[in-house]
Image (cartoon, rainbow, N blue to C red):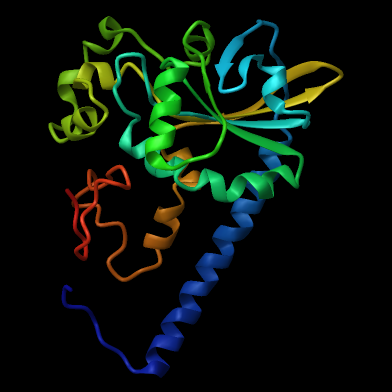
Length: 246
C-alpha cells in the first residue's frame, strides 16, 4: 500500500463534503446526457440478418424475444479465436445478474459475435454463463455495424499497439492482428410495428457502463491500477492470492 495523506475524521468529512459537490454535479450532467440519448433519432434497419442461436436461426426482430427493446453487446470473438476476448469476458460476467432486471423494463440483452455458434456455446459453458449469445458468422451484421475488419485493414497500425496487447490476443487464442479484426461495442435497438430501429451505440470508453468492476475500483483507495492496464483475465485464470493472476 503506498503512502497517503492521513487526516482526522473532521478533516476527512470536510474533504468528502467538497468531493460530494463534484459528484452531484457529475450526476446531473449524466442525467442530462441520458435524456439526450433518449432523444436521438431512430434509424430503421432495412437489411435482413439471420443469426444462429442455441435455439436455432433467428432474425434480428426475433432476438427481441417479444420485448420492444434490445441491447446488444458486440463481443470480440471472431472465427479465428479459440476463446472470447478476456476484456469482453470480464464485461459479460455481469450479464446474467442484470438480464432479469432488464426484462422487467421491457429490455432483452444479448451478446453477438462472429465466431460460429458452436464455439460461442462451448466457451459460454466454460465460463458458467447463461445469457443468450448469437452468432453473426454467416451475416454482414458485424461488418455493417463496424465491429469487424479484415487483417489487411488492421495491418497498417497493428504494430503500433502496446506489446502487452499480445497477452489479450494469446488468451483469446489468436495473434495480435487477428485479435484486432474484431471490435467491442454496445448497441440499442427498438421495435415498433414490426420495424426494428437502431437507437444508440457506443464503443471504447463508452463501454465502461458495462464494466461494472471499474465503477467499484474508482471508489477504492488504489483505484484501477492503470499502471497495469492489461491485468484483466478470464475469471478462471486468476490465482487465489491478493492481487494475483495467472
